[in-house]
Amino acid sequence: MSATPTPPLLRRVSPGAWTALAWCASVAYPSVVLHVGANHAPVHRDWAFIAATTVVAFTAAALLHRRPLLSITLLIVATLAVTDATRANVQLPLTALLAVDVALCLVTAAQPRRTSRAALALVLVLLIVHLGMVPDNTFGLTTATYDGAPAPRTVFVVDHFQLTTSLPHIGVSDEGVLAAVIAWLVGRSIRQSREHTEVLSAQLAAQAVTGERLRIAREMHDTVAHSIGIVALQAGAARRVIDSRPDRAREALTEIEAAGRETLAGLRLMLVALREADGEPAGTPANLPQGLADLDRLTAATTSAGVRVDVRWHGERGPLPPEIDLSAFRVIQESVTNVVRHADVRSCQVSIDCRKEDEVSVEITDRGRGHGTTPGSGYGLAGLRERVTLLHGEFHAGPRPDGGFRVAARLPLAGGAR
Image (cartoon, rainbow, N blue to C red; front, top):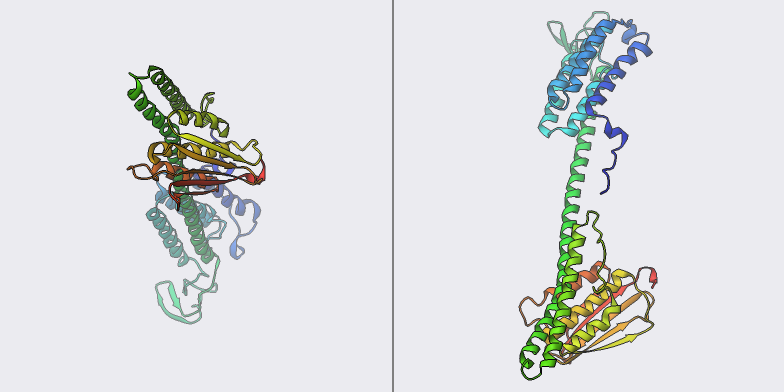
């Protein structure tokens, strides 16, 4: 049994770990790389407070899968706290929101749609509220200019908030809002891609199951139908001559035994193939038909059942690909079986054309009453059509203009090799 493939390295890291790494990066960037904050305000490195907020952020990362909304709330609170403690009275820079955006993206990608929308709304509400608490923001909402004077084009003032008619502009915190929306859209795209992949995988699995069921049905029909037809004819013949010609009845019983053993061998091989973990049969019984090389045995059994098979080869006989060889034999076997069961004639003709390098053609004709008068007799032809179509060949079956029935199949050879 094959081992489960190892997932890619990026998939081996849990969402909580990604969030924790993003938090460490957002804290380390202003604390280590930058020397001054926004508006040239000094960066205060209160390591004890940073450690406390980091504990809160790591707790939020651990809760990301089980309590996503609570996790994002804790991350926002920790982000606001550490930013206000290190760079007071400034907007949230993009680097400070890195952990929040990563968590929002991961929640949107993994959680239900309702949860992802609630997470986005929570982030946007808290960020927009924070816009009104610091200077130099957007949406025409501001607390004051840097010199304390009212902002240009102020319409009215409510407490320390002022509403202006100035056109909105993109500030640092506004970029944080846009980044949150972009993170949500990226997570939504990841979730949709995953859902699409799951739907395609389910469809492919269903198609594979259906294809395997059809393959088993074809093999069951091709393996059993011919043998049972021969058994029925030989049993009827033995019953009629058992008193007058015991030797002929003995021969019929021998043919019945051979047909029964062949059918059991085919069923045994099919069961072995189904039980194999890798889908490959453990072995092939020596007496199971594998191709046109078994045509002589087929014609002998059919002739002994009372229908003579006239086989004609055109072109040079040579080795064929296994699937082509077996399919050509199955077409002939099923067609001859239909002649025995339905045509009510004493002979049929089989033609195998190997003159072309890139294909093999087979044709089976008779001058009987035709096929399809018995209910359910069409399953064999349907299985042959499916088998030939899977090999990109052509299949035709129908009454002949001058009476009788004709089955023809053309099987292309890959690369014209033989």
